[in-house]
Image 1 (cartoon, rainbow, N blue to C red):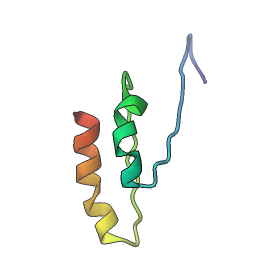
Image 2 (cartoon, rainbow, N blue to C red):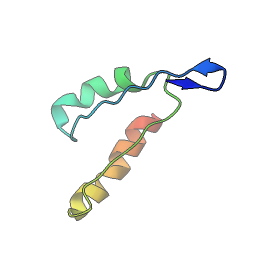
Image 3 (cartoon, rainbow, N blue to C red):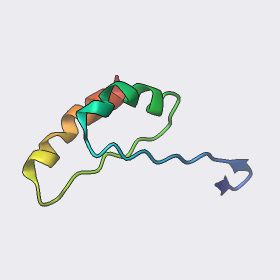
Length: 59
């Protein structure tokens, strides 16, 4: 993706919140500037799980 005078690499990884991908998350987000956490608006538990994902990204 080109943004003004530089190239920006955009990678989207959908783990669907599955625990089996937990160990891979650090390698997906290493050196990232942005992370997008998405949840199911029809599921309160999905929303509550965002705290864990945000903590994982910050770590």
